[in-house]
Length: 447
Ligand SMILES: *Cc1c(COP(=O)(O)O)cnc(C)c1O
Image (cartoon, rainbow, N blue to C red):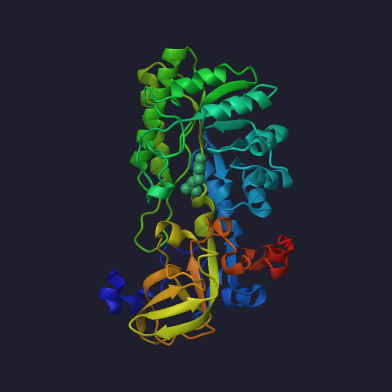
């Protein structure tokens, strides 16, 4: 049972303000109950682009990118494109001076499509295919983060020049809101172990890279997880990685100059969740690294970080239309989207909030469960929310914080076309990615 269920009277007051940090910065509630988003009326956008639709506030993405650069002026900030990989978004982050983190030939192709500078790009992945590696080499992606001895051998055979390589390390730091997104601990699939006696360990990786004439070892990488709100976890990872740099110097006689500490910065999805302390992160990383490096007479490495979610998640909302309200022992509000456009609740048990948009309701707030249209009982978008008792079919609902890992994790379950992505700036809406049609879906079916 949630607090709002225990205290229904609270819900009445809470329902008419927008939880700060959860809703995009530009959102306002209009006199008539309308939700204003980047200067546009959400119900107008729904009428024009249909529902469900992903809306993204272009200015907020640009501003967040700038804030990252200002908070970390001497750090390379690489946007993790898997969070939301479309041409327009990559253009915005390129214009903000950010670098780019890619995980596949497909993401590299989008970057290539907008001419993203290859010297500001990285390629990741624990199972890069030959196509992924060849795409990175062909485009000149500056750094490839290697994740296994097999990959080092495969890349070595393909690379001609001095391809820069970073070794992904498992730092043994537990972080991340869910086991599925906690990537920095032993016993998960990413990175080289720090344990002696494990065949794919860091020392073996250093020897393997240095044994490949086409590769040049540039540095180390780690990514402790996603939706991490505790800055001390990053501090611990930075310390551990500095120790590994020192150990590599002492064991192999090579001083590595680059250190990539990955992404994972948390964003609040529902009221009361902590926001990420970017200023504290910047300060504490700097102090931790400076201390460890000075203690071992090691030159301060050049830092890279890779936020994905934090750059785009809070800038997006999804608008749905209510198809049916079913009143029984529980009240179910069924919308015209669901786990095909938002996989996160079913993947990670992620929680969301929502609000009625387009009209004002004075009806008493009642606990309701917002569910999707798909043929699974687990297709629940938000549970135990207080919504107006007169909610009915045809109403519009908006869900905040949907800019990251919604579009990119979307599926065609039940043969449903994926929603469009609409960019909004200064009240002007632009269709960035159109809605997927039945024709798009049938085109691949050759039977
Ligand atoms: C997913 C991922 C990121 C970005 O994670 P966010 O939680 O979106 O910030 C960064 N680096 C690597 C290697 C990743 O796999």
